[in-house]
Image (tube, helix red, strand yellow):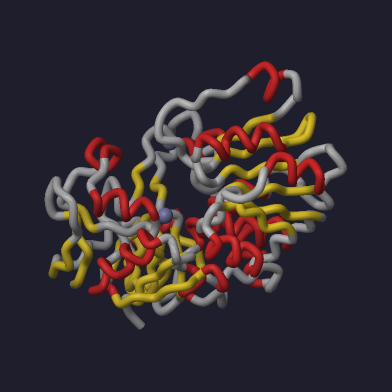
Length: 344
Ligand SMILES: [Zn+2]
Ligand SMILES: [Zn+2]
C-alpha cells in the first residue's frame, strides 16, 4: 500500500510502498478515505527538537483520519460491519494505569499516538484497536477526518457549562476556529476571538465570532474588558501557546473565571501568579487530547444533529502524494484545516 513515511532522522517525508498492516485479534482494519494534516505532522516533517526526542523512524505519519471498515479481528467481530464508515481516537492508552482506571484515559501514562509512536493514517490502510474506533453514523469522512482536532476544541470549550457566558478564544488556527463554533453552538452569549493573522480571523468570524480582534492592532485585554462591562471573560481558551497571549488570557479572564490552556508554549512562561491567578480566584485547566469517550459522544451529537458545521474551517484538500503541498499550505499561515484525499 501507499504510505507517507518518516524514513530517517532528518527533515522530510517520503511517499513509499509498504506492506499492509496486519489486523490483530482485537483490531479493526480500516481503508482510509480522508486524513487531516496538522502542526504535529509539520514538526515531524521538519524534524524539530520535539520530533527528535520522540519519534523513532521509520514510522508512517498521520493521526487524524476516517475511512471504512474492511476487516476485523476475531475478538472484534460483531462490533462493526464491513463497509461501515468510522473514525478513531488516535491516542492508544494502556487501559490499566491509575488514570485509565479512573476514566481519565486522556492522561494515560503509557499513551501511544498513531503517526507519532506507531504507524499512522497517511496510508491506504490502518489497523486500530476496536476500542478506539468510533462509528460515524452518517457524518461524512471529510468531517470524520478532523474529529481529532475538533475533539481538542470540544474538550477545551465544553469542560464547564458555557451557556450564556462570554468566551474568549486566543489563537484562531483550526482548533481555535472550531472552538469558536462550538462555543456558539453550545449557547455562549458572546464569543471574542483574537489572532494576528487576518485570514484566520476571517475564518473565526465565519465560525461565529461576534468580536474578531486583531491582536497586532488592538489591546486585547482592554477590548475584552470594554466588551464585558469591565468584568472580563467567563472562559478563556488559549490555543496559541504564545507568551503574549498567555498574559492576555489571565488579564482578560474575569474574577472567578476559567482559563483553559491548549496551546503549547516553547519554554517557560513568566506569569504573576499572585495577581493574575490567586487573587482573581481563577481556575486553570490543561487540555490534552479528548476525554475518552465523553468528548467523542458529545462531538458526534453536535455534528449529526447539525448543531455545529465545522466545514468552513477546511480550506485545502490535497491528494496523498502531495503531502509536501499540504505541509506548505500549513506553513504559509493562509490555511485553515488541510485534509488529504486518500481513498474512496
Ligand atoms: Zn493533529
Ligand atoms: Zn493508562
